[in-house]
Length: 334
Image (cartoon, rainbow, N blue to C red; front, side):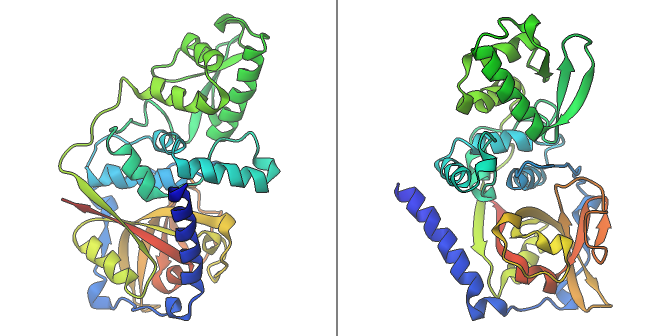
């Protein structure tokens, strides 16, 4: 209970901080401190699509860890998100969001804090994307063997529905299933057993363990420190110091900015986490501009046309980003 009260206190502090007059003043970055950096040139990261599942915190955490440890294979964001779902904070948020919005009932836990997600996964090691994909899951028609990629949220909802039928006795064996979802280490028989022998709340955790256990590897190299900071006057100085050490930064902000480049709306439903993966100085606006790696796929049509978009990577000016930011996360190598 004390941890929950602490987390609520953090949220209240963030809200108060954003509304205070001092929070709207900041030190802008001058041209001499905004040398061009694009981490894609040295360590490219593939863009994924979270679709309707609010796992942005896990996508940014997976990308951040992959870069930090220079891991050659893509890390599973789904693994990180599902692991985070067993935390007290995730359970509390899940309970209240479902209480407030009845349309979310029956959906898996969503939203999260990248710092907590990173700290929870570090002792366990990473699962590769090949074992547990993070944007689409492979649905197989039992009668025809036809396979199709299905967005994860819909896949999970289909699993929940199938699980009810199995536990009600409608399907009594793997051969009876109308469809199933296949993974590298999850056969149709494994899938049936998972649904038959798991509670609703433990299904995704057991699926994650089955899919990842044979592929999980420890994070290489030295330990890291994960530092969370609220937005403040020196937010870009900290960010640029990190860039100058060849380390990107994760930021939390209101994604309504991506639809309206003039937006300063504090809408909690648009709260979003991304990785900032580069910077450059724009002489036309006299602004340091940051490269935002989003998790909404590679298409650019969904963004305000004033935003420069490169296959899902977005360039956002400092004076547009700051009013919409709430916090940042900086990893230091030890």
